[in-house]
Image 1 (tube, rainbow over the protein chains, first blue to last red):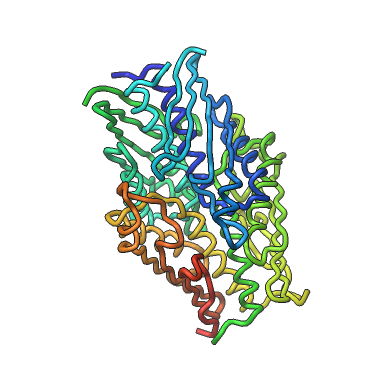
Image 2: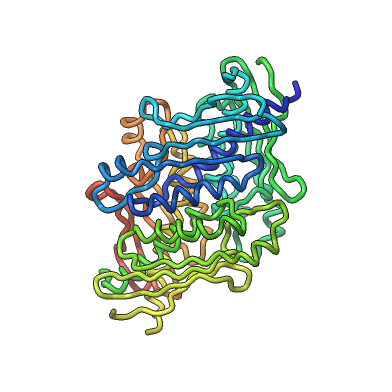
Length: 113
Length: 113
Length: 113
Length: 113
């Protein structure tokens, strides 16, 4: 059947997550450069349609503990992300965090604004 | 409120689209190398959870018409994509095509399998 | 024959350029988000071995002139980049700018520091 | 001082390596999809100027040993790569392999064809 506004809102939220992850995974990152990368990821993805807010937290302690040549490549295990999408009156709150060794992306809540 | 299975299915479909686009946009491509890239994109994204099928059509005629140094970078205007997600009994059919100069990703249908 | 230190310095400079371009091409960008992206690209690539400095200039006037949905995807035509590599006493200065419709990467100078 | 043809050949070889790595790192990959990804990477990078040949070997045994959800993201530890560049009569043979836990890219030989 035809998609509802709510379906579209959830779809849009997924697009932002897939985009964020696959655009920036692999970026060289160190504890010192983490802050500028967080800001750039947030402002970049917030450009996309229906994207209310993006919050990226690069886990610098974990980064510092695991690197020994000064930097590494960004992957899901070094990030916590929250993305809020607002599409025609429906708000979707989504989150990515590590679960069982994998970066799991999931919907926290869907509802009217 | 809590997400439903249907919400999650739409979210998963969005993730695949965002991933596909931002992983492969920018790849050097020519009419001769388009076929192997189509196959690799399809098989790569089909690895992701709940992904039933991915069909990528790189528009080689359009590619041939626009390049003059033998190759260009893959972007949305050179691709048509269909992705089908199946998540706990809900099937979501999604499509990307050019609309108004932009690669528009949208849900075609959502329903029970 | 075996590579010289100078060969390696030029090779390292090329790696940085290829990395920069293919990591960040496709990133959603607007005139408002260009500054944070410039900083993140610079600090990210400067993490790599032998990388003395990276200067990225996103051409916001050009960006503003070409976009009509608020943002676009970063490609070579919206960037000017200078990368300086220093490898075991040899300095290589490299630059990317548009030439003949293509983002051309080239060596400006190679020499002792 | 001005770059020589040999400098440029080494620079071009580096560009191909940086491009290959940062375009395809992060791609979802499994033992079953590795072959199509190898071919696509090779044909894609061979489009670039002066690129004679690209050989990518995705280490499927290593992949199979390390994944437990059916797939993982491509990174340097799952790849061996050889790239040959030919620029105005100078041939550069380059290779990437793991060394000391890092994917090390290096020049094997530089010379007249």
